[in-house]
Length: 308
Image (cartoon, rainbow, N blue to C red; front, side, top):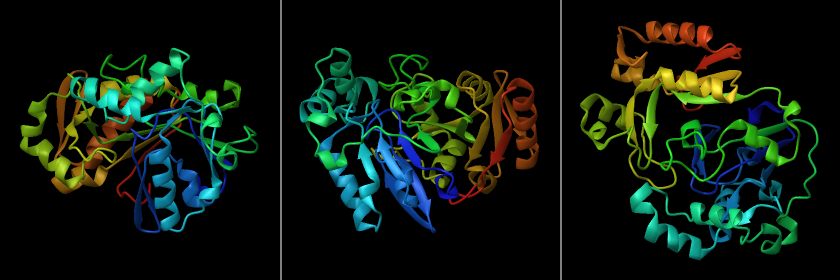
C-alpha cells in the first residue's frame, strides 16, 4: 500500500519495538521494529503518540535504515510518544518475561508509567529535529503493530500486549473517526503465536504437520527470534476479528506455504475441516466470510512474501 504512491503519511499508532515487521522491497527483505513502513518508499513516517520508544533501540534502527540507503529524515516522532527507559527493560526481564512471554523490551512497564502519569515524553528527551510538528495533510496510512487478539481489552488477558491494537486507536494520531475510509486486515492462512497463550499449548510444537508449516514459513519472531507456535486457521476467530475491527479489505497471506505442504485444513464452527486442494479451501473461506462479514468488500490471497 505504501508503494502505491497514494499516501502522504504513514503513521504507526501503537506499541513499541516489541513488534517486528518484515518488508520486501525490490526482492530484498528488511526488518523493522518501530519505524513505519513509509520510509521504504520515500513517505513521511511518524511514530505516533500512542507508541512507546526506547531511544537507543530507535537510533540503532535508524542506522540500519541509513546503512541500507533509506532517507531517515522522513522519520519523525510524536512529542506525546512515551519513552522506554533501561529501568523499564530491567523490570520487564525480571518480572514479566517468564510469566507472560513478553519480549523483554520494557513495553508494559512504560505503558504502566504512562497510565500512572509518571512517564517521560519524547519531546523532553529526543532532539527537536526528529520531533513531529503534529501536522497531517493529504492521505494518511495508519499502521498497526500486533494482532487483534493481543489487544489489551479484547485479547485473552493477561496474555496480551499493553496497547490498543484495534483500528479505532488509529484516531489517536490526531483525526476524527469519520476520516477513516478503509480498514485493511492482514491474516495468515494458518495461525501463529509468539509468547505465552493457553490457546496455543506447547504440544503444538510436537505436531509434525504444524512443525513443517513453521519450518516452511520461517515462523520465528522478528524481534525475539523465538519459534512461533503454529496451528490450523481458526476461521471462527478470524470472522470475529473482522467484525470487531470493521475490516473492509482482507489479505490472507502465506498461501504458498500450505501449497508446498499439500495439506489444507482449518477450524470452522469448532470442527477441523480438511480440503483436497487450496482452491477448495479458499473458496470455502471466501463464501463463509462473505456471508458472515457484511463490511468486507474484498478478499485477497497472497502466494508470495514479495507481493499480494
